[in-house]
Image: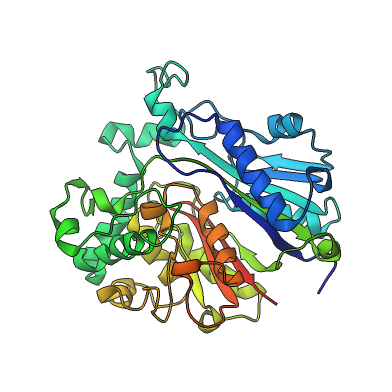
Length: 386
């Protein structure tokens, strides 16, 4: 154990739902209280805060709570804090927190992600949408072609897999079917009703080949991780989970004309900083804002080769709770809700501690991968119970 290694020592999550009336700051505080109790820490022990992407008015509810106002609200004596959009996906803030620990800038860092998009959409008087105007940034290259949504952008990559590698919609369906089956075992999941192949194939198309069940949905919730330094573990009561490795990488900082999603470069990068290998991983919690993104992570992380993701998940047996590589055991974003990346790290810790209840994977899981992002943004964490 190194004094400067980072460990997840506390996890917390607020109520998860749609159109929740509780204020997003209070949802954040709910998750923080649970994480502090889990770790056996007090708010006075926290000396660092990290979040993605910081407070933002647009899109409505996307990020209603920022690091600075949280520090003020809870009177945190922060020696270090950060938040920002220009970072390699949501869990990049966790990597930043680990960096602060490694350099001695903080000992206990509170990492959080709060989303309030469903409530904001239902209350435009409180969370007004952006006014019309000229498209800026990368959107100026998308909107002339009616490509308004990440569903459109992701669908192009998925269709290429269909055309080039033979991915079928029946194979793609296994992500959503598995997510929903696992969500049925998670009491906090947003959607707890399983779906069948007939349900999937009968759903309306959103952006070919992605149908309604391939997409996550707006969710109101807050998720918290507390990272602690190796020499501060005497302060905590929980089972610490070490951040054994992390990675982010990208070939092109744009959805436009990138050859492959950033999950491929990031997946390869992860194994360069650790002696662990894919065969050592007991469970994967893979970003699935759209189902196809999970397939790119399976390929990018080396669980199968490029183009073989469809065959790997064919029938859903390998990624089931009792399969050789249980995936998204809490339901992923498709089933458990759009927790925007942080839910995957939260669940990895749950599984490695053996706290999954009816969704706990068998055996003695010790190593997990959690990821966030797709397209031009991607982050991977390798978590281990020493």
